[in-house]
Structure formats: C-alpha cells, structure tokens
Length: 286
Length: 286
Image (cartoon, rainbow over all chains, first blue to last red; front, side):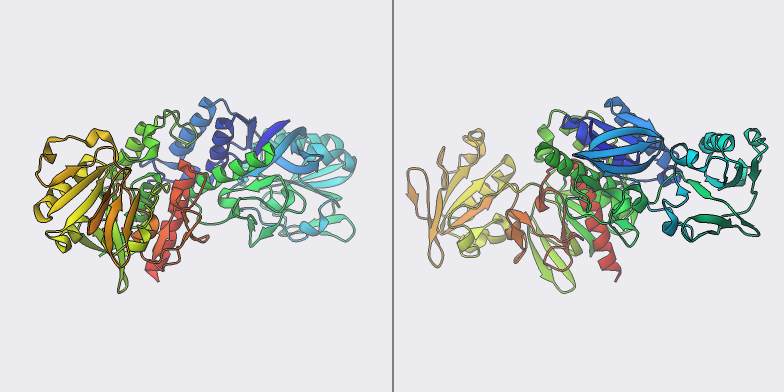
C-alpha cells in the first residue's frame, strides 16, 4: 500500500512527491504527463525562483527530470475514481486498482464543465471508464466522447461488445483515423453532446442537429471533474475546499495548487503542495 | 516612492520580488545578504522543485543570481524600523530614510529573544541604531552589543561621542580586534547582558559577574525582533499573525515565509511570498 498517492503531475504534484520522498514515504504520482498542463504552452515564466526565464515546456521538463532523478515513480494515465477503503483508499487507475493510505489531489485548474444531464445521471448510464462499465451495456447502443488518441482503445473495446457506438470527439483531428473503420462505429463529425437525456436512466443524447437514443454515455475526458473523483468531496465555487492544512472534508485526502484556488502560479502551487504533504505525513505517522 | 519594499533576502523575499517585478511594480529587497540565512549551511536540499540536490549555499546563490538577472535591486543592510507615513511607510535603513507604498516582511525564522528589561525600556535608552540615537547619549556611559564585524563602525562612532563604551559581543572571535584599541572602549570578554535595568529610563546592565551603570544600551543585532520592526505588529506564538491573504494587522503590510509559521521550508516560503505580493499589488492597484 502506497503511503502517499498524488493525483496530478503538475508543479504541485511533483513538489508534494519530492517532500514525501525526502521524508522517506512511498509515493507515486498519477498523471497524464506534462503535455496536458496549461503551463506547457507558456512562452516564458520568470517568477519561479531558481528557474530564470524558462518556457513552460522547459520548466515542466526540468521539474519532471528532477522528480525522476529522485527515483519517484510517475504512472502515466488517469485515475477515474477514488473509493474510501478501510484505513485508506482504492484508486481506479485505468482499471488497475491501487491502494494508498493518503491521497493528495493536485489536478490543476478546474477545466471540466459538466454536460447538462450528466450530474443527475451518474451511475445511471454515465460512465468515465469503458473498461469498468462496458460489459453492463453489452449489445446496447452507446455514445462515447474521447479527447485524445489514447482513448481509441476504449472505442475499439466498446465496438466489440456493444450493438452500436456513436463516437464524439473533442477535435476534428481525431476524425477519420483508420482504427475507426469499424462497421458499428458511427463518427459524429462536428456534432457535440449538448445534453444527456433520461429520467431513471440514460435514454439518449442531444447533439447539434440530431437526437440519438442510447443506453449509456462514456465520457473519456483527459481530466475528471473534481467532485466526481471522490464521492462527497466538498467543492466551493469551482475549487476543492481545504483548510489551512490543505485537508479536504475527507479525512486522509488533501488538495493543493490550482485546484484549491487562485492565483494560478507555480510557486504558490509548489508551496501549498509541500504543506499539504507534510500534513499528510503527520497524519500517517499518528 | 517604492511600490513594494521587501524586508529580508531569503527565498520568500526573493520570490516576492520576482512576482512584483513580473507585475511591473518597483521593488527593492532589503537584506543582510545570503550568508546570514540559516539555509546557507544546509548540506543538501532535494525538495525544492527544479533545483535538484543543491547545497543551501548553492541554492541561495542560484536564487540571488536569478533576482539580479531580473534587475531587482538588493540593498545590503538592515531595516531597523518601519513607520506608517501618510499613504505608505518610511523605512529606517541604516539611517537612510526610504519611502514605500507597501511592505512585505520576509525576515525568516524568528531568532531574536528579548533580553529581560528590553521590551519595557524601548525608547527609554534602548536603541537598535547607533547612527540614529548616538548623539542623544553624548558624554554618557553606554553599552553596545554587536554580532558581527560590520558593527565595529558603530562602536567606533559611539567611542567618539560617548564618555565610556562597554562592548559586548556574540562571539569571542570579535574580541581583541585592533580597531578596539580605543581608550574609552572596555571589551567585556565573556560577559553577556543578562538583564537591562531601569525604571523611567535605562540605568544599567547586569552581566554574568558585574553590574554596570549605563544610560543607554545599543543592541546591534543582525536581525531585529519582528515586533520591534513596526509598532503594533501582531505576533502570535513567535510568528507574525497573517490571514489567508498574508495581510498582517497593519494595512499595507504583508508577511510570508518562515516568519509567519512552520514548516520552515523553501517551497512553502516562496509560495506564500508570491501570494502575499499579489495581494499587495491588488491593494496598490485599488
């Protein structure tokens, strides 16, 4: 069982990991690599002490090199759900289940906006993990939304078990990939999911120009809305609610960096994450 | 008038200065250089993201190089007092008086312990600035306490104007310097000032073995106790009291880093200082 599981591989997550390591705790960072970080595209940053005039890409790479030189494991991929389990937590990491004693959420700036109907229908046909829930919809019609080529495997898997798969993508770049020459996959082109319908369970999606009856909607986002990551996590005005110790309302779960509030700045994020992890360690040592 | 005056040249002060500069504000750091920082002697630090396995000395030098490459002015010396003045503040910087609209205190870990009697007799014969107050004690007997060779000049100055000067030092290293071959300076050797006496005004000091009648005591410490820096600054259990915005109880005065509380860590200090200065800038812009 990992002492400290860190969700998110931005400056906050990497800073927390370094301090956990320095304090001799087992630590793993779960994240989608540095490309997804909004910092990646920053032309130049000059207000992070010790790293003068660096591009965002260069800074993130410098940080990642530091973390790797400290022999900290970085697992690439997404944690879609965290369940309290006994004294700790179980993380669903692309359907690999990993146990951790404490969790530090450093998922960055809130980016995910729910689709109308989504929040109401979670667990009633809305899924964030094809591998976990696909079999529930064997021979049914389903919709899937993907944001990168990584999720093509999920489309392929659903096409094998479902009757029909309607594929929505974030960018047109993804349209027309050869992998999608599957008879029962319909590529929705520029259609977006505007609304998810259903009373007791998902019954369909409303696109720009069409309504499509489906029994399930798989939302394969690169990041997951924070309040869907752990059930009951308290959010206030888009940010995770934390106290001065960076404790969330769930015991053993801490949060730091952009996901807990502005300013969205590197030093602020790394500093908060350090305090968060030191409090997690104090909690572990009790 | 400077927009942001930063008191202290450790990681917090330097971080605050970078963000002030990035936000196009005029900023000056006042500090005693990096040698006085307790980080200076750290053998190795590996939990400040982006600076792997650095000695404290190397890290502080890297930070200072960054600050200087950003054309931020660093004034070496000590700010002994800060007075509210109109819309801003006046800083007593070795008897040069400098105006600033806002102040960020980043003086580091509280190190200074008052001498019994000191707090009670401030302004009644206790002084932290020989240049400022020396003339008040012309032809009187005085005691002076110094912590480094830098203050030898103060001893020389007092010997010129006072009748007799009793010299107390922090370390024996300072004893017997040739500059002290002054007829009216008595070097107190291993004597320490145990207590300062006086009712309405200073009347003497109690050493280890002797009592010495004096009319003034000059305490030339490398750092000044935080509550003596600005009158009325609220301190709680040794640290400066700040709110979530790192505002102190005095409007326009912010504090961050070790001086506001534990953990005494680089990332925590730089992050807090960034938030503090951004709030100072918001205050300036109003």
